[in-house]
Length: 222
Length: 80
Image: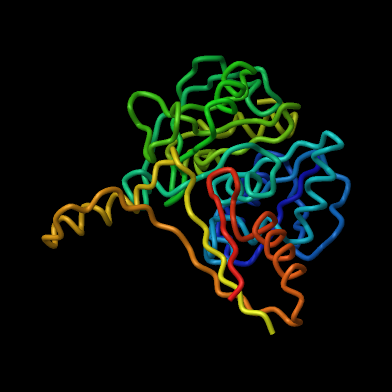
């Protein structure tokens, strides 16, 4: 399976993401710059974390309007898997590929710590190698991860099983409604999540809990 | 040239932790009787031309496409 990583100025987790995709997928992803209008034929597109455009205006707002994001939207419409992590989640939400908004953490503080995630839906192309209800560890590092959506949207997300990860065991670090840590779109091929699974994929990280997302998305054996 | 001011504010019902923190700080400074504080953004924008109606529709398009996130924010446009 082939993958691509989108690069924008101000992202800083691209290197970790490329390392994770290379180690788990067996070959390095192609990288695609923000002004590129075409994305090569790949099975998975990842928008990594960081601080694109210095978080100016709103986190992810300016990145979401760059030419490459139109190409991402076209690929997503064709069913290609798209995964936005942290700033990448903010970008795909700002680009309209996922509903809602990510607001300033309720504590107003940047949080950098480990949280617990409950796999709320294991029937997606990103979570099929977990069990529903399984609790995994994951690092988070963000200032604006407080998921908000209006009541109608929230009810739809809940009803359609589109909340994929929830902060578990009282570890919600940001005040997200319904403890939302990650959601998918209606077709299930676009995932956005605030935690960083790419930072828990090898023994040197102190755990392997994040691997299964990449193994599932890349269609590889565990 | 047309000068415009765009004001972006959070919608009612959207939690504003920054506004809450400011509200608390105003109280701590001894300002009594401060009710809710909501934080927003102001953009002063200059536009070429003199067609105010066109400017207004362009500014609204700018708000919808970039300046405001209409999931959580409202905007007003005023041309000075």
